[in-house]
Length: 106
View 1 (cartoon, rainbow, N blue to C red):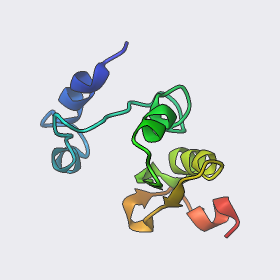
View 2: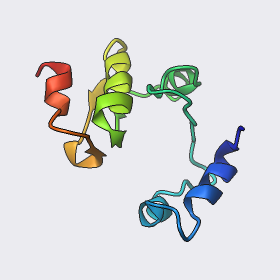
View 3: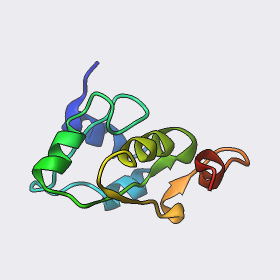
């Protein structure tokens, strides 16, 4: 079932939704570009690469829920392009004892 952005926001802003307080702080404005992703990487089957090229982006800042899936996948993909990539460790969670440094062999 495809929800689209309005459906996703509606679901995430329900009173009983986990993370509701965080979602309220990051609801996009009408002028913001929004890319909904279906899989681990924000680049897989999305228009993100085209959008970044159109905007002539020079840098990508990745934030997300899990470092061991979504962030690592997107970071690995973006590192092959000409964008400067950064990843604030405070802007992600991870499961277990695995860290972003482990995934990227830093």
